[in-house]
Length: 339
Ligand code: TYM
Image (cartoon, rainbow, N blue to C red):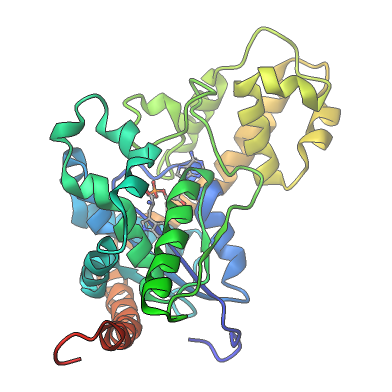
C-alpha cells in the first residue's frame, strides 16, 4: 500500500462478473471509488463466487472477470495504488463465510429482499448459495477488517446484515475483532433506474438491452437508447416536487446530475418549460463522453491479457497476505486445534 495512505480506514467493494456492466454500476459504485482511492486504502474485488449463485451467470465467468477488472482500471482505479483481485483466488472468503454462517440466524437471511426477488416463486428450488449469498458478502468485507463499503443503494440491506454479523461474532467471543463496516452510499445516482421503466432498477439481468447503457456500448447505440428512453407527454418539469410522480424523468435528471455534478434544482432551472430534446441531447453527449473513454480503454486492456493477468496476480498476493493473517488470528480466537 502507498505510504501516503496511513489512516486506519479500509475501503472494500466488489462487482459480480456477470456481464453487461452498466451505467448504474458505474455511477452507483465504481465512479465513487475513484474519489476514495485518493486518500484511503482500498481493496476492489471481482466477486466471482457470487456470480455462481444463479445458473445463468455460470457461463463465461473467466471472460466476465477480466471484463470487470478492465472496467475498474478503465474507470480510473489505479492498480498500483489499490488492490484489485479475484475473490475465488483467495480461499479466506469461503473459509470465513462458513465461520460467519454459524453466527447468522436463519431469520436474518429470511428478511433479505434480494433473495426473494431472485428466487422468485419457486424458493424450494433456489440454490443454497443464493440464500447464503449475504453471508459470503459479509465475509468479503470482514476478511480484510474493512471499515467502509461504497455501494449502490440496492446493497444497503446486505450491508446492514454484514454489520449485524460482525457484531454477533464480536459479542459471542467477547472481542473487538471485526470493525463494524459503514455503508458509503454517495453520489447523485445511488439507484439508477431502467430506461424503460422508472420503477425498476437498471440491471445486468434485464432481458431488454434497451433498459440499460452498457459500459461497452458504441456512441450510436447510446444515442438511440437515450433518445428512446421513456419520459412522458408533459413538458420538462419546473419544480423538484414534480419529480416524485415522474420516476422516468427523475431518473434521467439524476443521471444528468451525477455526470455533470450539477444539482437537480439547477438542471430544472436550466431546462424548465422546454421540451425534452435539448436536455436529452446534452445528456447523450455527457454519457457518450464518459462511456466512450471507459469502453475504448477497456478494449485496449482486454487486448493486453498479460498486463491484466499480472495486475490480478499482484492483487491476489496482496489480498491473500491480509486474508491469511486475519484468518490465523480468527482461528486462535475460536480455539481451533492447530491454531
Ligand atoms: P452488483 O455486481 O450487482 O453491482 C455492483 C455495484 O453496482 C451497484 N449497482 C447500482 N448502483 C446504482 N444503480 C443501479 N441500478 C445499480 N445496480 C448495481 C451495486 O450497488 C454495487 O455496488 N452483492 C454485490 C457484490 C458484492 C459486494 C461484496 C459489494 C459482493 N461482495 C462486498 C461490496 C462489498 C452485488 O451484487 O453487486
